[in-house]
Image (cartoon, rainbow, N blue to C red; front, side):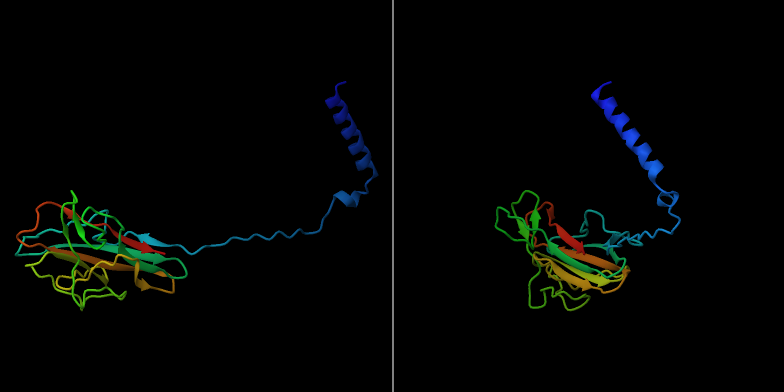
Length: 207
């Protein structure tokens, strides 16, 4: 007999004696057994698919004519939370360019030129939902901006703000639910603006 088989035999023998020595009630417990089951549902905040005109990975500003007409773009986002509300924020990405660090600009795809953010006393986005109070874009200057309005059918056409470089709250809610927001962009360019495509990355955060 090997060492392993001896060990098995010994265990079997002891178990046999143990069973024989125990009273019936010790291994036939008829009392109810209580087991607590606990699960935690965490708050889930994020984006959902809006009803129409959903924002994809890019918004193309169309209709821009240097020195004469602005280009416009528009899409809808939907933010939601299952329990404790959410905070919707907006900002541009942080990127260093050959012309300096300008996080608010639309940059030419070859980094050779830029279209700066709209300027003026009313151009700073202060965190509230805005539909008026921004700045109209002058077709004789090069500038771009955004507007955001609660609802899925509103497109701003004459009032724009600079996209903040730091994460800035658009709206904070305190209860479960979902809301749609119309996100509008516009840009103008002077007749002497370098031709080509310009772009910026706008970050939208729900948390």
